[in-house]
Length: 445
Image (cartoon, rainbow, N blue to C red; front, side, top):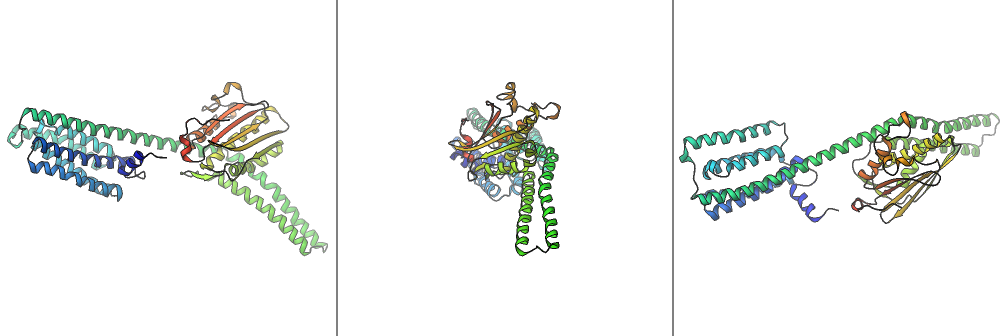
């Protein structure tokens, strides 16, 4: 849950729906309004500029607040950005002539304005390039004017007031620049996180596609039996009709059985379609028990011929906040690994036990098999490192790494691997709500 200061900051920056550029711009509008208000008060207190000019600077403050309102709350950033830039440029020009030119703090403000336009505008836009060029060239022109027409520049009343103004302006500018840089660092952090999330989603989808062939084979096997059963029942109906034994009860019985087979095929296809549906971007409530059952159903035709029994214990009413499609990918990886472990051992039969239980920290899920266990050198963490595989050339080494990424980074849970007496055990801990993610180091049983 967000803290109060985070909610207030989001409000002032315009909310979470805006891009990093827009949020930084909104923050600068607020800081700029405070800057002009403070600068006007400073000029009034120390009599650094004419009264009308100090009041004019203070009048910029409510204007910037109005720009912020139109931009952050009405979504009109790009409409008002040129006006904000024009006002800043006008203020810089006025400050140059009324605040001692090159001997005053205006050069600080030119530097700050360049940072503002770089940090809060799209970098390749014509507006950004034009305004930056204007801010760079203007001091050269102004210094030239000061050299040839010094009477145009209003000097300070005394050297002490000039130094005082420089000191205060430097502190204000340094604060503003520091906040701009911090905001830009945060902007890049968000963009890097967004890029990382995008790459993670691509990897998940690619992993699903890599398994498409084997799952298509599983789907084909799943459909063979019901199709064969429907074919036999159709032939039986013809034989009953030929022998005059096709009555209403026989029709009802065959219709029920055929409908049952069709429903099984439809459920298999729906599970297959659900698994390959793109993962939702937002967290949502789902039942891990239902997701696990769906994956078991998908793999049933590849598990049964190998005499692999999967037992599932839990409660489908228990729900967590997360990404069901990605969670199913994790379960699929774990079950496939267990199946391949049985095959490598040459086992004639095997059992996989999946237990789900509620703990104070969330829902804990354990997957135990009796396939001999994991190489101790890979435990406890090396098995989750990228490109670590025990399958030789046939393995990619990304399955378990992807599982750890999904469970811990995307869903805020934990995953652990260990060996038991007869085989391997994977323990997953899923938080019940997004707020549980912030629980420090929740324990695993």
